Length: 522
Image (cartoon, rainbow, N blue to C red; front, side, top):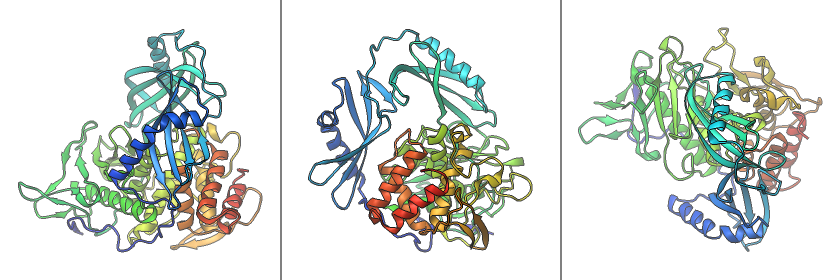
């Protein structure tokens, strides 16, 4: 099988998602102008919101609706210090009236003093210990600390945010953020900033990918039609970008892992389809909405059985799997990893507890939708995660969206203990919600795969279709979710999104409420 690369070729034959969203697309220059305008008016916005004199807003993102409503996402500072959990989104009508505000933290920001009782060195020491004690983290190589205000708890406190870099046990880079109380030195919160996901080793058949003619002859794996996405060969390395893939005749790979280009083709194809999905479904111009591409790195490490997104490099990285014979470069993996970038550029859901579960679920949701969008006969869309990697050795998927608990660890329904699970397992509640909202409860067959989705209360849920479910989740993520959104907040955000898109009391709105009730989020 020879994989042909056509210069700037289309990733899919035809879009399968309607636009649907109320947000209007912004060019890179229009988005930059909107952010400048928002920042210029940030002082008056802070006063209108009743923020204290020591608080300032920093504009991060702007979403404009067709009806003129503007949603502006802000980070916050207090006395010049970053406020973790201080992010908020304002919703302003065309007339300039403040319609509402979505806040990560409800408490008023105030600390008695910005002088810390413990030193930054003590905070770093505490963070290094937390990293050593953290499951899956090891080999810390460096640590930094900065003074912040922690506002995600019941009462804002002066704190340190330490960042410990190193490697996790499986070779994944680690960037563990540890928040410690500046008065006591005790750990308050921690989360891993490198978002991981596992994908399949199956390839997508003969596909078209975007390449660019090189000035020196031949072709480079640069997709100029999609923000200039580049694909690099790490060749077993774990740092830097490695070498940009180059080919003399623009015919790439042969469908086998023995050919180094094959993994690159799958990674580039996955990035292209994901870019096209965002554009077709949401009018979004790239991951961050600014028309700029991420980049992909393949052949990471030695027999590395994982893939990850790192927001610091704005890139996706793929290992070659067990025995270096199963590259983790499948289509839904690319969709999953790039969607971590989408979350980082919008809601910024912290990768821990319930917000971390929502972060992971967002990547599963859109990774699944990318797979359906591609309409590729070599990898038909399904609601199974990692169904072809055979990570369990018995042919079973990694995760199931219709009944998450079938993997032996994920939660079907919300409970008080969900936030204590690993984020890949706490994601089950949102994955189940999305399946129910899309397809409904009970037995059903989609693309030859049989599903049978239960509900917490025995209720029957009627699905509204995946396209509408995508629109509702995306709207909530980009407009109403914040860094600390939990499952109760996700219910509120998705109901508001459904109201925006389809009307309060509509069939879609009622279906969102029913699907959340069916997973015990009330």
